[in-house]
Length: 568
Image 1 (cartoon, rainbow, N blue to C red):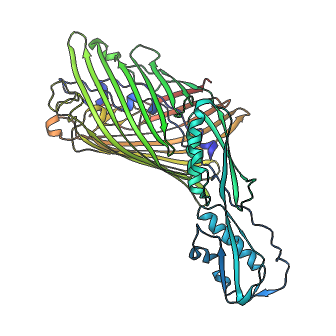
Image 2 (image 1 turned 90 degrees about the horizontal axis):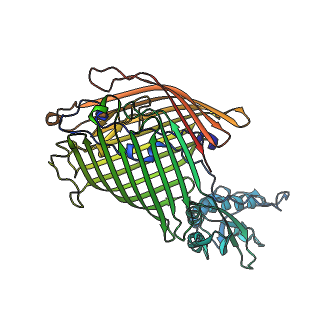
Image 3 (image 1 turned 180 degrees about the vertical axis):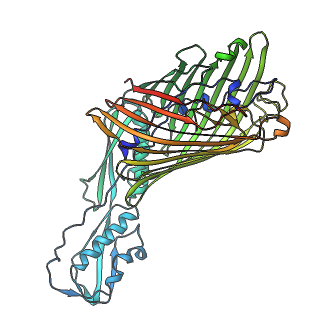
């Protein structure tokens, strides 16, 4: 499944022009602003979900059974477990209940031992179950549970100040008794989450004479800076079809497990649109608490039919966020986060001056996670998230009724609820089905940055970015992918077919004069080529089914090309 998932497309696209973004005529007194999706470089690069990984630990294989060849019969009336502190006798009863009160081959003792060991393991405890020397008097069997305990945790490797971040997680493992696999796995995964470092863990028997003693070796190596470039033709005609994006990441050079990324986007066939983003993150403490900050600046100067208006839109977005991994395992993850967005946007026209200005100050809370399981022995990945956003009137934010707002009735202090989810399932060894869905609800008239966007950046391949905007709506993308198939020792191909559909609606249309709701649908097919394990080339044929303007013509079919290559 991992090879299938790693071939998911890397897609980028240009910002949409201001006035074309509505999917309907805009009021003469306002020019629409730029949506959040257009100012977020992450929406320009579709990333594959993480590969499904095995657990950090595996149960010990069943030990030899010296009683296997014995013809002796035994009748067990009770079984007790000495040394079991992490698993109750009630939970262990399933290991032997069916064997009580009737004659059994004496080798049944080994089966009970092995079943008990599995129950202990499935309860998240690394332990060994042994059969001590004994005389089974009155049918009473005693087994011994030797729970693992961590004696030493060694961090091997020299990665400079960043090693302190690993040491904080290693300290949580030292002296762990009994060895709780769920807790140990959490801290090992948090250590592996530190950007710029590669962490490998090995559990070994300890040199200590204590029973059940184990040592954990953490081998840490540094990963170098990363960078990639993307070229694509998914933009709108008014700001340029072709665009290019560069991103560089540098991480793991301080004791806070920091990462720094710089992203720049520019239209290639014009000087009509560009943006740059600087993002930073750092980790604090030993529980995975992460602080993030980002600053984005973007400009758009629509051309084509809008060029005579000499429009210029500027956007500045700042973000501060704190996130905590409430659940962190190989197969289940849940993150909670809270943050603040500061958004300043304005549009000017040559000779007319300021047309619109929006200043948003939005606090939010978010929870998102993923779950990996199997259905009929086929791997399944489920993802989901929920976010609640609230605009503020202070910190320099715009007030409702401000005559320069993009939407005259727009409410900067609006509440917005957003949800997203998805699923990936391996239907066969080569066929994968995928679905991605989003929804948004608000009962207020929103400013463009907060509106739900449909089009090339979100859902609606073949349409321009932000072809439709609404205060609320739902959307979904469905895809079936085959492969990857080897075309050459260093070239893989994965063909796919898709259906994208979305619906948005506006609030208070009696006062705004806008159409109440609009929808779009597109279908198509394409192929993703993985080249020399360094680049993805995606070629997509997209067929839009609906017009975006009332009474207008549907957009023409498009062949979309995206090339993403690793530079380091």
